[in-house]
Length: 338
Image (cartoon, helix red, strand yellow):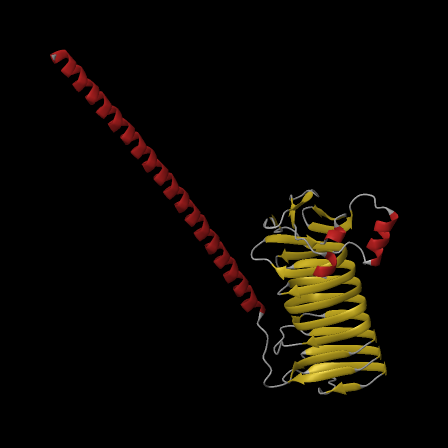
């Protein structure tokens, strides 16, 4: 993609509570903004890569990149007290050739990385989108056309997703889900062996395969239906209470329910990931502090060297003037003696 669009990186800078934005040059750090009172984030008309991660503290951050082919595309940002809205759109009138090019590529392809605090409701509506969610704690509702959805080490409750064509991969994602994938494959790896609440995973696939993998110690209640395909289930069908409710329906394709091997390695917990993020943020702040201290030291030493050089030059001028005055007085005294 980089070779096709010749991506040039920009940073999206924004002013809080205003839709005013500008595209800065490479190397400028994206601005933080306060989301301590925001409960809902809406992202619409998105096409491109969209990454969602957990922010450290109540502040969020948006970093956006766009290709040279999307130079006439922009992002509209509007934030009120409780809601943050982000929308990609063609900036300014386009001629027919530009509009045809835009439509053929699935819209304005602006890649975004959004850092959000916990307990935020995220709503995403887009066309050709690759959605990547890492260590996120909140809810998600998405309506996507051609897309891939990947989520790891997150607590998303509820997770509602409707994708026309694409793929879905969930790993170590807790919470109840209602997923409809019209065309494509879905894979879910569930690692929670002691859920505090009973999650319900409802999955419908019109054409494609559905795979679910969970620890052998889990006792899911399973309801599986396939119109045209095969079912493989390593867990018994439970009629009573359970740790997890599974309701999978595949019209054309296979359903596979597997137990995690004993040797399987569980992913990092949400707390571990957040601790690592805090550690990285702390290390970054320490590096910045050391760099600033080094710069201040260099500037101070430079100023001291300059001051010493000026003092030396002044001293030399005074000594030279004194020697000249002394020589002149001696010459004058000699002339007077004659």
